[in-house]
Image (tube, rainbow, N blue to C red):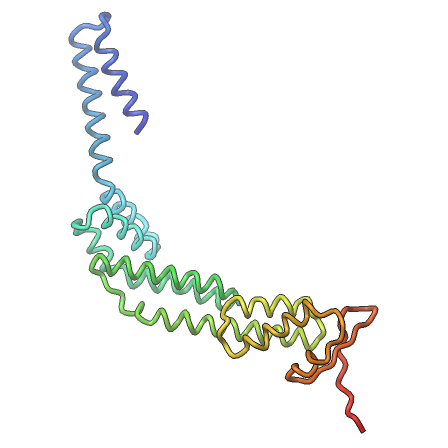
Length: 236
């Protein structure tokens, strides 16, 4: 844009120089006017550019990106039928394609990333619907986000408990934090928050903390570690 504008101004400047005859002046003016008109047309039709880019991506199977570009095209010109037809054709396939990424994150125990993708799909479905293209499978997104959140929180809680039983308190703390970071309203929340507080804050034996542990475990300080696990002795 800057180059074309500068060239146009250059043509105007040159046309006023006395060293050019009328023929050359007219030629430069014509070239400048044509280039400037081309620039104006390009700036006035971004919806067509988005649409053309979308068609190229469709050939490579990038359906989610195709749908995104179609939405951008319709944002620029809501009446552009080509982009509407393309979005209507590709929206559900693009949704499913992006949803696969969320599932991969779940399989990798990367629940925050999965939830981010699912929330992104909510925005995508809302924007698509705003242009008259409904995605029925998006109606269950809220429930799926809740399920993924619950699954992730429970999974990290179970991992934390395994580390805790092995007296690997550093990793237990990390896993408890991840469980709490996903959802603070699940059943494991109270247990996780208590254990996290206990492991990070207590430096000496506390009777009330021992009694509060559901498994009735007993902790003592040792030279090797801040905490050591010992079963509670039964009184005779």
